[in-house]
Image 1: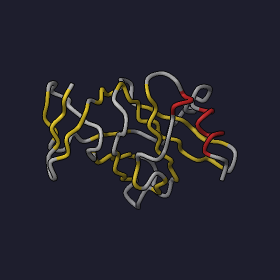
Image 2: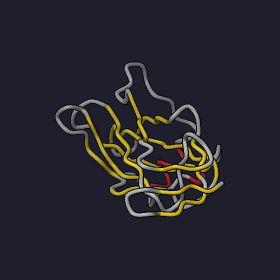
Image 3: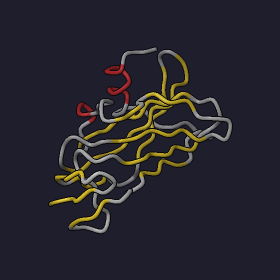
Image 4: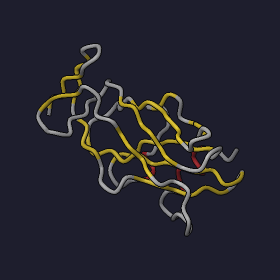
Length: 139
């Protein structure tokens, strides 16, 4: 598999091909509450579901703002997933930094090539207070 830094660098340059396999990236809010309707906080966990073709291998990254150099995989458990027979891949995201975040999905095509997918709009992450099953999000 190509190195993660090489794949992360591809984020700035790659675009999905026609007939793209990833059709949806969904980040659940869970039981977060706070100063905004779409509250998400540091240290709190959020399920992510990616819909693609069955058997596709994906790597999920967290990018801060518009800088692809900030893309990191450490906030995901697991960060590398394979879509099941229904084309669904699941992971859990635990953001560790405040600010605007973009979830980036790399669909591995072969050892040196990947298609890149991202949510259109970044999600703002505030300071999270993990309360067990819930998360209080401060600005």
